[in-house]
Amino acid sequence: MSNPTGHVTDFDFLVGDWDVANRRLHHRHVGSDEWDEFAGRGHVEQRLGGVLNIEQLDFPDRGWSGATIRSFDVVAQQWSIVWVNSARGVFEPPVVGGFAGDVGTFVGTDVDDGRPVDVVFTWTVLGADRARWEQAFSLDGVEWETNWVMEFRRR
Image (cartoon, rainbow, N blue to C red; front, side, top):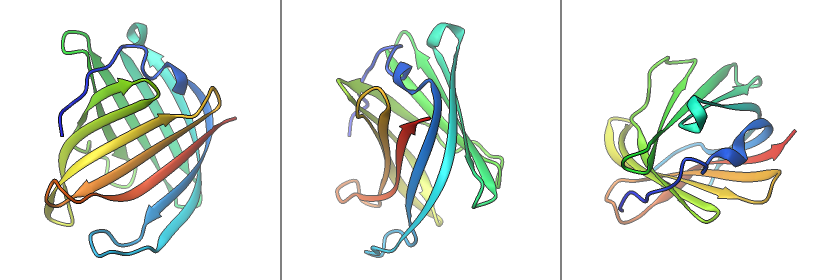
């Protein structure tokens, strides 16, 4: 999967405060259809004229929070996205990409349960007050399993 390009304004829609409905797969890479559902709250700000986008997500029922840092490479015309959660305090490997219309695609590699995986984040803008984020992993680069979905609704 190639890394699409984007524009510095790609994440302007996300600035503000959000209620976030989460669905996260209990067991990955085993064909499970058992999902954990939980609520979250998010806040997104821009910095540096829009080339930096910072998001904090709090999951009070889970006892942890997460932060996403997005930076726009003005030469490559691509976003790099990193995630860190309060339970580990470690930046996860970045995904890179951009938007084509209302759909953003961001790809990278990671390790899941000790196994290397390909990762894709998909953002879908669903109007001014709604958006969806999805994360999928692949062990072989061919078959993909969506393992986390966040439905954003502007507060």
